[in-house]
Amino acid sequence: MFRVLKTVCAAVIGLSVAACQNAVAQQAAPIQYAGNGHYYHYIEENLSWTDARTTAAGLTRFGNRGHLATIANAGENAFIAGLRQFNSDGNLHAWIGYTDEADEGTFEWITGEPTTFTSWNPGEPNNVENNEHHVEITASGNWNDNKNSIDYKHGFVVEFDSTKHPVPDDVALQEVAELIQEVYEEDFSKAEKPSEIVALARKFLNEGLATTDDPNGQYGLFRAAKGLAIGVGDAGTALQAVDEIYKLFDINALAMKVKVLESAGEAAMPADRRKQLVLAADGIIDVAIADDNYEAATKLASVAVVAARKSRDFRLVKEAVNRVIQVEALHAEYQKVKQAMDVLENDLINPEANLTVGKFQCYVKGDWSMGLPMLALGSDPVLKDLAEQELIEPDTPHARMKLGDRWWDLADQQDEPAKRRIQERAAHWYTTASRGLTGLAKAKVNKRLADLLPSAFPSPNRTTSPGISFAEAKRLIARLDRLDEERWAVLQGKEVIVPADPRRLTDTGIIVEKNERYLVIPCPADKWNTSPNRWTDVDFRGHLGEGARARNGMPYMQLCYSLDAAPLVSVVDNYIIRGSGKLFLAPSDREGGGTSSNNTGRVRAKIIKIVK
Image (cartoon, rainbow, N blue to C red; front, top):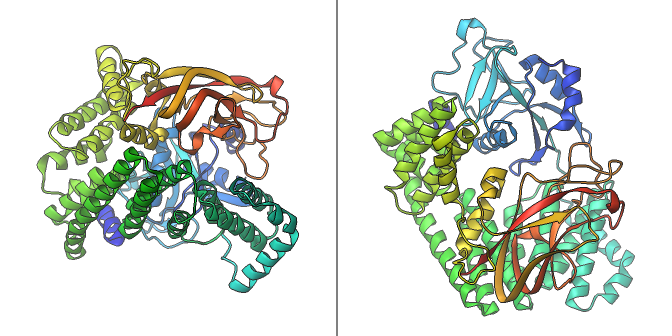
């Protein structure tokens, strides 16, 4: 299926270098793409393609030298197109490492790797004036050949290859396991209670992060952490161990996570851990669906139902059963799509087949970069015209708003879940247009953006508040990466300001009663700033500014919560507060203490009650 998708998409569609290198420290940190483990860094500097290539080659990350990004498949292409969120105006025109400079008409990647995927705009490449030999990627994910100059405003995307280690063989793993047993014999003997076993698992996790010169030992420590956590049903720690293994070793992370949750579900554990397991499974189901792995999604949904029933939480059981129904429905829909894919194997421009697959990609999976070129080839005249307008990419605020209006009007004619997906596409264009709008046009756009978020709720502590549903809370969490300050401001939960002092608990004024749940949404624009000789500009997730010092790869200053002044728990784990007691928020300084008296800045958070 994937081969056909990328084939269809291919068928459709002044600073000095030294100054730019000095400016890189002002950009966001590189972000990892899970599909290949590589890191990507969008740099918003107007350079020619040649200077961008030179600049990229002068950058390194943990010993890996950078290069202009190369793109092997549609997933990587969509990820890079998504880096537009770091552009100052939400748009994207960025150089990538594709050129026909050596042989006109024969485009090649600068790394020498073979071309396995392209995503040209319709009519491209066209080599206007015989002077367009270098390729840019745009916000829609489509490509264009352009002049090697600074006449057009460009950023560029740097890719840092990340070579992964092979998984140690059975003999090596046995040797490492015996060594761990010997070195930590006393720790094992003391770890009897579940809480002590969890503490030991987390110790092994941290030891693994600190071990950088022994791949076999590192894998063994992460594996030991995973095994201990599974034994007591601590899905969160076990899954974190899998994430760390995946960053460094060549594994199938999804398959390993399915096994983790299946095994953890069989362990004896308290009800609150079973609830955490349900939430963890729910999040990984989304990953499985994105990969069209409905076998894994079905297994995870079953794990969630069993865990929910054992928790004796009727509301959780209902949500888990509904998730099973959703997965089954998506699987059935996918079977229809597979039939259309079979048609496209022999007839790439078949209108009905393109419409079927395009709607599935856009409406069901939310993969607009893949689905839009197919809708442009489809048989529905309205969707065909909309898709063609998308591929042209409107470049003025008013034109972007008008395209958003067309999607918004179309959504009113649809049922869920298509209605929500189409509204989110309208929101994409409204967001890119809003900064350039004024007056009633801006007011309309902001209102519609607010309507798409679970907003317009009274303060969560008011007894008259209708609150927010759990399903709405999950949708908002899933869209956090697209939430900016303007859209955060329209959320009408209780706003709390958390200063950058890890020694101080901020009283939210909220009492969480037994069985109540609250959603915490931090403002994405806010930063803490800590002692300059240690690190700077830390956001609520603990992500650091470029050039900052981190220890053992662990994040610093994550936003955390506490009930009745109990030990801090990271908000970032799932953004949903459960339990009972007075709710406090605070930054957690992972290094412990430090120069917190010199810290400045604050992170605002909205707290919204979940009522059903």
